[in-house]
Image 1 (cartoon, rainbow, N blue to C red):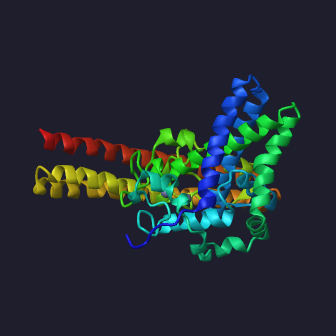
Image 2 (cartoon, rainbow, N blue to C red; image 1 turned 90 degrees about the vertical axis):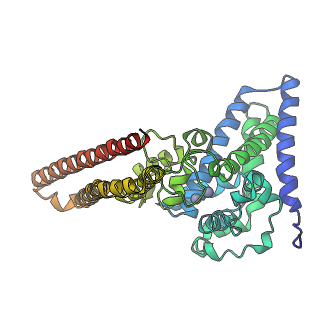
Length: 385
Ligand SMILES: [Zn+2]
Ligand SMILES: [Zn+2]
C-alpha cells in the first residue's frame, strides 16, 4: 500500500457527532419526558422537505438538468438543500457527475466495487476536497445563486439546518428539541438515506434497462430514498426528470417536479420516449432468453433468435409510431393560439383526431408487447422439457 489514505477529519467528526448528538440527545429528551409532538412533526416534515430539495433540486435539476425552473424555485432548493448538510450544489454535483461518467471504476467517487461501506459513507471519510477541480460543473457555476450558495455554504447551512428549526420550535417553547431532533437527528437520518442511494441502490434489485453497470431498480428502496430506488433506470436515462416511470411508482421528487410544471414554475421536463426505453428492455429480455436456451442447444437458440427478430421489430416500430404521434399531439397543443380566431371548432376536431390516433398507437404497442411476452414464456418451457 503506497498511497496511504488521509482521513478527512471535518467530514468524519461532523458525520459521527451529528449522529451521536441526534440519537443520544433525543433519547435524553424523551427520557426526561420533554419530547414534544409538534417538534417531532417538524423534524419529519423538515426531513422530507430537505430530502426532496436534494433529490428534485441537487440531483435532478442541478446535476442532470432534467428540467428548468424559475430562480425562486432554484433559490428554495439551494437554501433547503444546504440544510441537509451534504455540501454545496457545486461539490455535490461535481462528485455525482463523476459517479455517472465513471460508474463502477476507480474514478467513481462512490464506486460500489470498493464495497458497501466505501460507497455508503467511507468515501466521505477519506475525501480529499483539494482534488475537486469543478471542471464538470462549469455550466452550474454560471448561475450567481449557485455561486453564492457555494461561497457562503457553512453559514447558510447552519442557519437553515440548525437555527431555523430551533427558531420554529421556539414558537411552542421547545428550542432545544428543535436543535436536537429537527436539527441534528433529522440531518443524520437524512444523510443515511441519501447514502443508501450510493450503496443499497447499487446492490439490491433488478437491472431491467442496463446490465453493464451495477445500479439497481427496487421499489422497496424507492420508499426510503424519495423515489431514487429506480436507480437502474436513472443510470440509463439520467436526463429524465423521473426515476420511477410508472404512475404508481413511488417517486415524490417526480410528483413535485410535475406539480411545479403545472403551476408554471418548471418547464422543459425531459423524459425518455417509449422507444428509447423499450430498445433496452427488449434487448435484455432477448439476451436472457437466448442465453438460457443456449445452455440446451445452440441451434435452437439461433432458431429462436430468428423468430424473435420480427416480434422485436414490431415492438420498436409501434413504439416509434407512438413517439411521433405524441410529439405531434404536443406540437398541436402548443399551436392552440393560432386557432383562437374563429377556428376553435377546427382545432377541437384536430385534437380529437390526434388523441384517437395516440390511443390506437398505444394499443398497437401493447399488443406487440403481449406477443413478445407470450413468446418469452414459450421457448423456455420448450427447452426445459
Ligand atoms: Zn448511482
Ligand atoms: Zn444521478
